[in-house]
Length: 214
Image 1: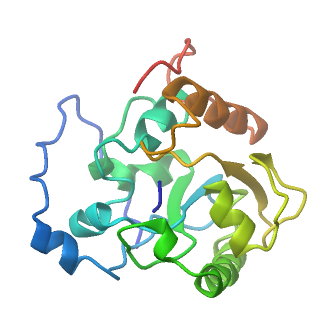
Image 2: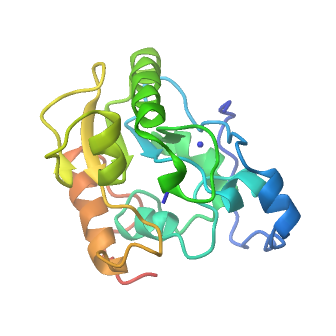
């Protein structure tokens, strides 16, 4: 749903999944408040995905979109952005595919509604500076409500936006949080796929019918 540096060269893929990380304790989650996850970023990416801000689970483990039930990683694969379903542990492989992850607001909170209007707008300004520095082809803002507030676009809808941020084109995607009941897994993957095609990003891996993954 929300989610964020230094980029290392992509690590080689393996067929075996990494061991499951232990569930953060209540104390670890509380200690993660206001923590920052480094961006997965580099110059000239095809797409920089921008979450709203990290949740406590993601901040506690130091990985983007890491809370179980968040559908970002399944949607990324089902839409053809990744050749297989990545776990959050593999986030540093994304730049090798021309992809990256950042956030509108860097600090972690338990809920996105803990962010005020001023903080979101400042986050939007800082994201503009980041876009000017790294020059991604597209910024994909993951969450329509945060986009409307951060960039003062009250009537914005899911999909491509007329304005650019720095020189980057903008597409707003649905929030992939499991709490977003307006978008099921197939619909979410379909919108991610519509964006991938519009952005001119070739499908990773064999072309096949996707979208039923949860």
